[in-house]
Length: 368
Image (cartoon, rainbow, N blue to C red; front, side, top):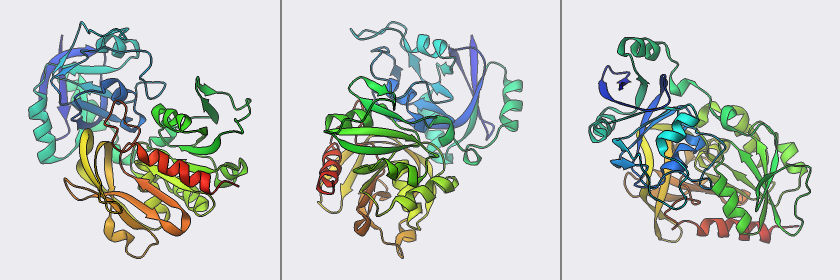
């Protein structure tokens, strides 16, 4: 069956149906990773977006039960050149088409994804709709709210606190393990592999909704605080920024992706929207404190304005070597630092995993 991708600039692409029936609207972005489509599909930072995967064959190793990064499929829709119908992997339980149908998500395949990617690189990201009827799709797209005018964090954040252990999520009725470092996690769009990495490093993660106050978080007497990744414009999250501001200097803080931007706003800095964002698994980043260069996994559409930090207590610690955007900051006197990329990086690369160890060591040094 024919299916169409319509962009808000009037561009139309014709392809074939993938996934569930119906239509879907979102900001169209591209990811250049060659693997990791299951992690991408379950990454909360893609809420409100239609994800185009640039690698031409998607789904060849199928979908398994272990590699999800959240409890649901997060992007609004999916665009691929070709979806593999017959995956081959001993862990696979279903195809990517079967997953999308099962979760009610609309996709499209059979498009020239290279051409669409070049279109987005030249013109910037835009809203789009995947549909089966062009006229109806154009009407839906014209009536849709802009991605930039929508708050997504409250949609993807946990609705109630929980603990994380080797089995995964457990009820707060269970007491935290006193032998482990207590890590309070402010969930703005958390990925499970972040919790897995910290648990393996000796932490007891306690996950809180994004609406949780600093007072409530501190009442649990954490040894450290993690500001999670998440979707959307950080400038819209005034209440969350205030929570981060109230937490500064109270306990060691580490921010990842959106957490980096929240820390920036909390100390008086600003962010701006990138033309087409950083989404892929091959972004080179230089640590200005050590001189080390790592290859990183990234997924974000906003970046820190370095000039806005000039009169704050923060300093830039890392830069992207492709476009020199800010990839890390620290507020030394507050024992707070953050990075713009994903050190948990499932399925990889793993170059930046040592930052987990660094923060755990900071927590240990400040444990009382």
